[in-house]
Length: 150
Image 1: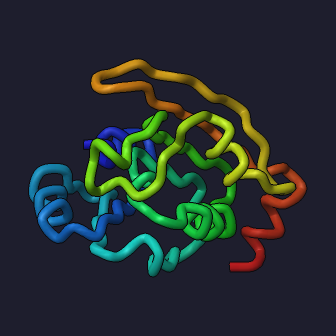
Image 2: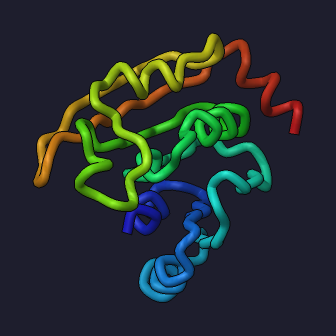
Image 3: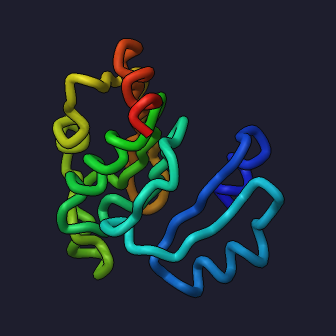
């Protein structure tokens, strides 16, 4: 549904997930002319071209090394990165969670990079806990360098 909502305002969307069932479901229920879905492990994902914006919703907690995912995202995103993660100790409650974001500083430190700066962060209380949302923007002087390197 996230890809469908974004597809209403974006030129093109590429949804990525490892789970074949999730991809099949998305293709049937959320597909449109400007939305594609790809089954691939995030650690192996290669951007077909630099993205204007990358959106990561409730996914980083599923990786033992989310820093590697974020490195790839930073290198292949031109303008903005939106990230949402659950806050707190969730690995003991969800067997699929591999990383805890016990405080907002952890994600901020993972995203720390001289090319990116935080433009917005927010906390959302929802069952069963609290979530952190952050939006990062690439510094203007680097946008053209990334666009020209592709």
